[in-house]
Image (tube, rainbow, N blue to C red; front, side, top):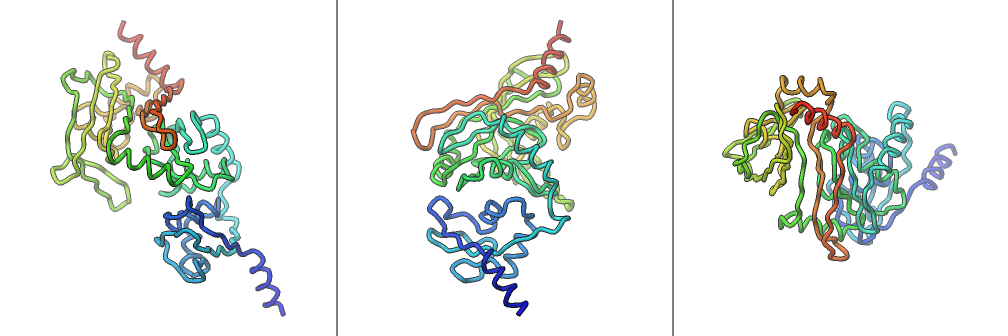
Length: 324
């Protein structure tokens, strides 16, 4: 009797969802992350492994790609106390992001991402930008990152609100018609003649899971264009425009030229960082300040700018004062 009652309760809480055109094409594990907000990845993979999630009444693997009109069975999920992330911390991140949205329409959302926030939960972080945006826009049927930014890099981040927009923007990125410009504060005097760095990059993963990228002949072709924005006595503010989009590309290419970026924990210079910390710098000085691309729906050429935050503007003002 008790067993029947339990079965009845579960069946009442099971969700059967039909996949729309916008939702088709994504992996089932990513789909579940959007539908089961706040549920840890470990729990999502557990219910997939146990066969509690079904597509068209069949068991599926996490990498299964959803098709239009698939029927997904999602079981009721109850979190244990230890699996619940602190709600106040999450709400703070969500509310913080609202004021960082610099453009939004029915196709796109563009964010001026704060430094220190990962774009995706994972690597010990269960709540990133995309999770926060999904909490901020609970009615959005589709929200996916068009590209990535390192956790400590601030600035422009494109998020697609439709699958068609994501495809269109990915095509532009592949064809290298998207122009992305970054501001970086680097050590020493950048040489005026150094306008292009072409150096292949090889990604290595350490046993700890940390990723380190090095210039290596076996690596992938990588190109960054540079220009000088402002000179200071012990540093240079440069504009960096990546032509390719490799992991840590700007950070490694500046290090390769002998001018690492301020406060780069992986590729930086400690003595330079100490000097910058005296001025109050506490974070990687790399900011995606401008992007130019074709709007996926209207075809209009958009140029979006994201201002530096006040802390970084103060650092530049202090450096400027040292020049006189």
